[in-house]
Image 1 (cartoon, helix red, strand yellow):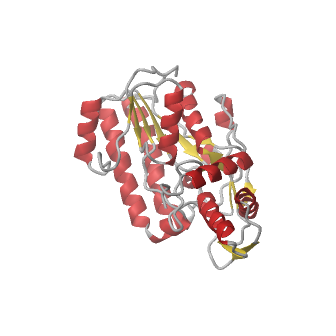
Image 2 (cartoon, rainbow, N blue to C red):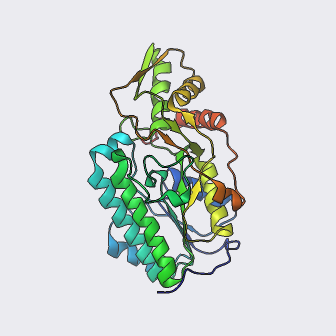
Image 3 (tube, one colour):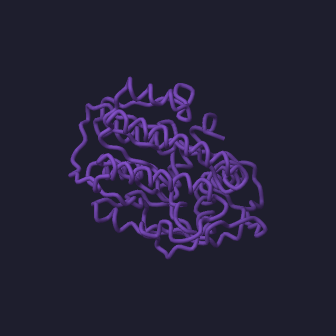
Length: 324
């Protein structure tokens, strides 16, 4: 087994084949938009009906034929607290198979630069705040999404092992809570911010007097616009190399109560905001330490209020076609 790779990152070739796994999802579609705007001309993306990433033979055949030079692994089965806590086997099994298939095929076919996207839920439930990268595997996970978190931790380990054993300069990025165009607005399968947007938009349209949210509203969360995330991914691929995953966030957070108020204001809801404390809150606080990202020369540019406003606009303009 070799030592960790020594590699000097540089600008990616805009004409080389670049595969975005999960290019129709929230993150993948934003990465695709960003790469197009940055002049990349040979982007590759296949829908799940065109390529089942849980099918190992199909994934290897795709890599053999397409021969991408660069890869972002943004494909994953994702969901909110309800989905994660009620279907943990699905989140563990599907994500492990997707990751192992794509990462093994990428190694087999010599992918030069790969970025694996994880999730901030990989960190212990009671990690010191803000959460540093070296907090990984130092405590118990949040039980409501531990299966998903274990799959993502396995992905990080897979990338690190590939660096050590095969000398490939692959990296991992751990985004905080993401939101923006292309999000999942399902009442049962979405994350907190798109769920709030849908709920309050419906309440504003119907004239509802009260909207009741899960939990107490006291947990604190950090939110990053997906277009910022996409920009950070390209920046890291061109500027950063190292075995440690890199946290990607804003470095600031809000309570869920504050978030609900911002969403209510953005959609024009004037009624009462109530809370059902019998429902789970999840992790009390989850704020990422983004020092490593700052050292790499990147910081977020889209403020939360602005980001929510534009996401509400997108949701309303695409209400007939959004994932729901």
